[in-house]
Length: 494
Image 1 (spheres, rainbow, N blue to C red):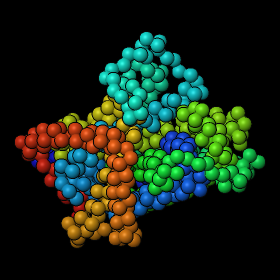
Image 2: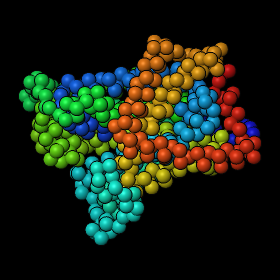
Image 3: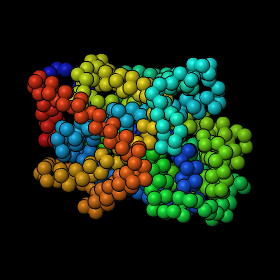
Image 4: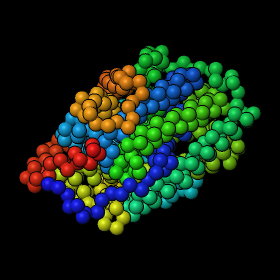
């Protein structure tokens, strides 16, 4: 079934600078400020912590370079979903889209927006409900550590949750009304965040609080003593959370000017800039604060943010306030970028009849996937209310790397399936770079299954939970004559 030629369509309005900043915006959230503490706790060595940041950045860059070839070949709304449809067919593409909706994208929106609200709460305390209300919880279960937890805790931390949902709603409305508005926010705030981070780095390097001796200190940790390999992988999972979001720019391919040129460029330069930013600021953290101090602060307060302690050493009491404000700006911006890009996956699924029908609607005035944006906002808000999205984000990296590896392998698939199609960009170092990335993804997935079987198992269950929906929606789509074939002309661009 072909779409009505007169129906409203997504319009290409975003230029190269904007999408480079969108890549940066989608990546830099709270991780750059928080993850040095768990990584220090796992490794006990500044050099190993910095090595993890470098390796995670290098792997991310290999993934981005590999993904860029496909993004340049298939430039359409939906990104990985559309790529997978050409690589492996509708079923595998649907599993990715389902995982994005149920966990990868919506849980990211919920998590990052929650950090925004929590940071606001640290400056201006938000109202809370009484203990009786907060203790209303449903579906009890036992965690891997033997603790009692609940699947649904709607009234706990009510003030923070209300603000979190308010932010998701506000930014969904902004992006509902036009992609240019979300892009404008990214332009302003991404630049602000990067400049502020480098400003903090310069202040730290110039401060008398820092010492080269801090970079030489090591602390013995049980994880490293038991298995350095597993400890490095555990620490890299923290770093990968900070790098997560790099591939989301492909989701808005139909709204990018000259996408076959600009998306590969944005992926490459955006990831390189983030990698330089992360290595610089984490070097400063470890230069100013000894690793033993970072570990002891985390032990005393698991929710402590290492960047706050570093800033207070550099700028006094105002340093903590400055970092809290910077986290608010970064998480606001990251939430905006994820809300801008993620619904395009749901929109692409709906066009193929593999999601709720109404999500395929393009707003006649704003030219946005308006209903898909609403679906993303509602589900993200439900995850916030559940109070359980942190457990979902534990599974996010595991699920994401299954699809990252499949996407990299798809470069080889498409070189055979679409061998005559023009490729504005070919991955540098082919076939070595994509092969190395595939091997790393496989090792990470296997290691997670061994070291974190509960999280890995739950991630696989969540992905598999979409299978009944696939068969229902696909049967309906076939009956209605919706095959997804109308995308063939679009994606090849020939």
